[in-house]
Image (cartoon, rainbow, N blue to C red; front, side, top):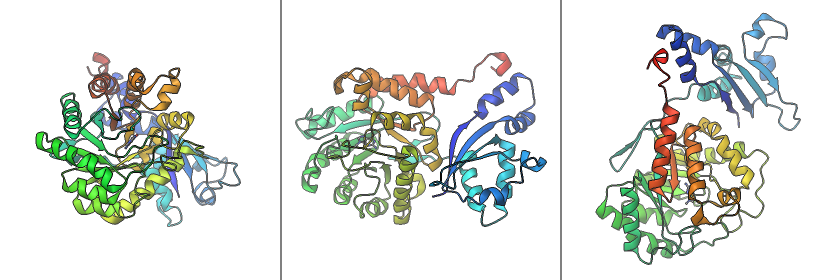
Length: 407
Ligand code: 9MG
């Protein structure tokens, strides 16, 4: 699959601030930001012939007007190339590539990563999620007897509802109700069992709050009843790869979905996770799910994607994905990420158990927010995560460098 992956880019907001300090007009600032801003983009799945079709010979003046072209030496990945250059150089390459149907695909993927269209807001239960303004909070309501961090805490539906309402008071923007554990090693449950765990909880929350409700299920039959009971979003940890009827159920209800990546199913997923390119494979998987979703009639603006931290991944895979979330932005969808109390945090903090991972969870949440990586974070400890995000989001949005920077 042809893909442009943004490896790094100067932040246009930061360049523009420095140009403002130099007292340049807004028009000049915009022009210079394009000329000076630099990006590295990795092309995978491209044609080896792109170079001869698009790039003039070495030493020619025309070649200098395009990004530097560094092809990969891999025999088994012949279309890989790293493009490095200013925005102006990329613009020239894009207009050149657009001229022929043989290279038009390259122009399209480059535009997608370098000038991403703003993601339209999502409205759920009357609440607007305006992507890019802050990091939203999804509060976890597990109603499973064996969930890894809070399983068995709620003896009945009404105590789960009470807990859910506390999360809303603490600042949850959406709740995620789950009746089947996805903890590594866990076994599937029947549709009836899953429904008996979640339906009363969804109905109970609905009666007392207008908070948007997500239901974490991979089964179409469960999703159908949950949506009838008033859920607004289906969170499928298999990203529409396990039940072929699920996308149709979500589409028919006009609901939203979160498509998560996993390698394998919970029972065995942590046995020997392996990737040649974890970011690329996660993106391919999520894109397949997005295709199922849109084919079934779910509009793009109602699809969130999630790299599935801890689902068929080693510690190193998890960390690498978190560090490279910016590449996943190339999918053009809001990103939801769940790190809360997960075992990779225990490994990083000397073997702490799930209940002792709050500080580590907050560290991961803040890091993601500062790096601009997640639009929604899925957490157990909403009040604490809200404070961590208040700080991290403010650092990310900081523009007040003093009078010379425009205040
Ligand atoms: C149900 N569930 C457990 N962990 C999760 C995660 O990281 N993301 C999503 N979307 N769901 C999750």
